[in-house]
Each structure stands twice: as C-alpha cells, then as structure tokens.
Image 1 (cartoon, rainbow, N blue to C red):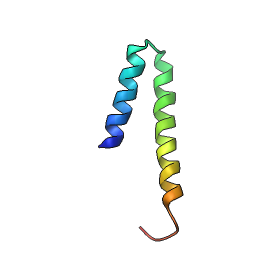
Image 2 (cartoon, rainbow, N blue to C red):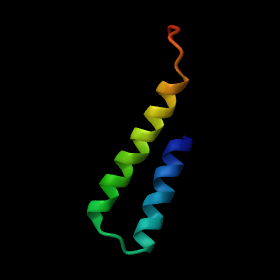
Image 3 (cartoon, one colour):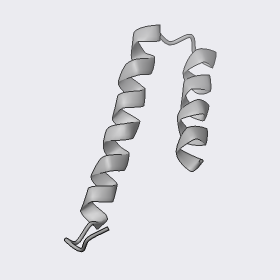
Image 4 (cartoon, rainbow, N blue to C red):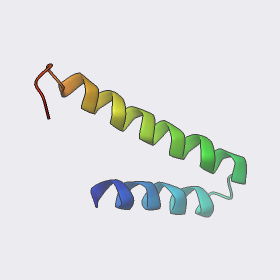
Amino acid sequence: MIGILLVTTIMNGLAMMNASPFIYTIVRGLVIFIAIAIDSRNYKGELR
C-alpha cells in the first residue's frame, strides 16, 4: 500500500512539473529497483 502511494505521489509530482511522459517509466522503474535492492539487502539467507 505504501509503495502504491509513493509511486502515485511521484507520478503526480512529475505531471505538475510538466515532465516528459518518457520520464514516468524511468522513475517508476527506479523506484521499483530501489525497493528490490533494499529488500534484498535486508535478506540474510533465511527462508521466507
């Protein structure tokens, strides 16, 4: 739920700044990549 709010807030901010639509995909991908990187960093080898 927090991830959805974060991505939506960032997309709305980009729309208010009149950013290029191509930037939306890049930013969304970066947010997902950072979230996965943080999650995998917290993973210490135990089974989930």
